[in-house]
Length: 211
Length: 211
Image: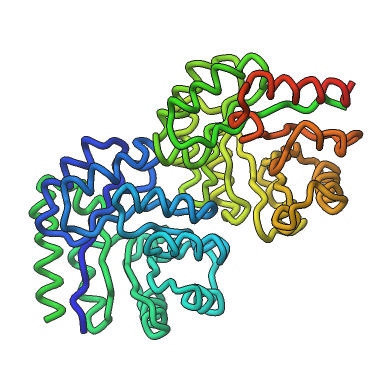
């Protein structure tokens, strides 16, 4: 079993805030994410800047692309991103043209089916991002059996599954024995008084559970 | 019958190129569009800049949003946009939360149904962007009967329909008698030797056909 990676989601509204956190945690995390709103606010300069200060980390552009996949993918790649996201509602041709430019993660929001997921695999896309179900989130619940089963199903299908939504160090043990690709933490890291310590807490828990 | 408006799609890759064309045509066009790639490259600074140089025009942020509609909508509005786009594949809650912040246009790409379109109307969204069918485009054809019928159907349903894809002055007459809301031209204006003259050619043709 591979050890899950740790991703910091820099979903701040301005570049200096994102860069501050990135510089504090880039020695701990494996993946540095330029958040959707950050990219809208600052453009792909956000990706270029993160690539500049985290040269040996994976940089993700969370564009949530639904159209013009080839153009957006090419621009993200040129800006220094390793991965970009497409929304699950994007068409297969959009995802395929993005995947030709850069490694694509499909973000699972709203409705999707196993049949559709097979089409992503056929298109050469093997990364998905699983969000904690909104129902659970709105009900104030943590990760439950249903979410875990969905994650396991996707892994069994052959996907590398990243996990996001209410991810805190204390929930990681729920995933013990599950081959999670990456845990994505946003506010739990960038909203902490000490982002470096917060990231280390995640990393230590990952190292403890996935030996 | 209302006279169709003219929109320039500034789908350039950098802000100076977009601003140059905008300043050349803003006295002629009704709507100034910050293109998807331009926004990715430059961030919402692109929208702020277009708003600054075209204070009395409609400014559209072509974000093609599929998620986080409320946040993206709020940021676009604050940047000075009047309208933003959502992709037709976005969920109704995404569109609704965007529409609470700013006027939304649904971009019709790939599969959509009349039943779905009714849900957009129910969500308070009455603008759609109709793209020339890709099949027709790839076959090197111009706007045909099928496209015209789709546009008419959407207008009959109660939508304000903007029309894009291979829009040139000589095709406008095909739409005679059709209550098109806006004609969107990109390269036909910004790629012209004289963008102002190109925009005027569109405008004169609109004035000639829709008296």
